[in-house]
Length: 383
Image: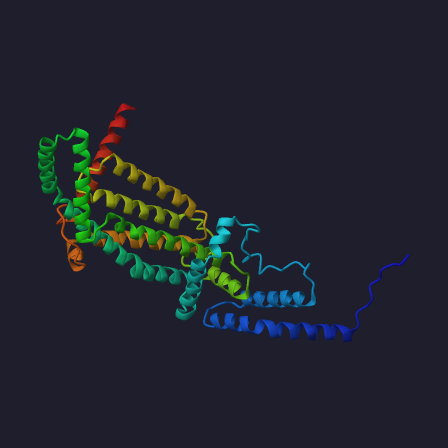
């Protein structure tokens, strides 16, 4: 029977082993580490995180070059190691590896590196830049389309009156039945409306362009920030450096952007901002809202509550982006209500346009608060 026995390693072999490891590491890691250290050179770090990254990279590259793939990877530190799902859902995996998300992720890192801003300021500034360059022009275009469409609807009563007279004459002359007359009338009415829409280039579907651009942009930026937190789609030195920076470059009570806001302040701000957007849009209407409009408004209120609950569980960097985007949307809606701003952007005047929109919103808000107060008083008296 042969017994396996461990041979002692001589100092000469150990020295050669050490030189070979240093040689393998220096050739492979130089480019990545030089970039990482150059990015962080101007930042106030203690050096502990970067030392962990340096040592970890050496260990991993050396073990892979020697063929020891069964060795366990050392974590950065128990303080900085994120919880990475071993098998993420296919939808999230596909989203994190998609080209738009990777493009957004690369540009976020590029903006962060070029401006030397902390990550909280990078997220806020990139959100403002994107919304100003993309969604603001689309919001102005949406107002143009809706205003022109509302104005052509003012021409329809005269057209309807004329079509009714022509249909009545045709019924007497050609002995049409009521069904035939209705079909011809509806076809002629749609044709006339289509001519007006083509004349003023104001198809209602064009007003939805803002939604079809804003929602995918919001998803891509959210997914790119998630990639930065969980070091996706590929685990590399650059990804680790970005992760460590996110743990240090927060603000005030959310100093670690990789963790959820334990105080729930950011999620509450996010929820209140979105509710303010929904209520301001509802209060700005001149006509009394119908059942469908009330139903849609209630759906948005429920969605806002659900998104607020989700915001309590996601990393703070995502919540910072969501709060910034929602606050920008709130300011955008308020500003675009002003008659002066509409005149500046050459948005056509409409019959429903308010001369003093802010007074109207304030008046409607007071009426709503008074109703709630009266209802609360009645309930307390009944008890």
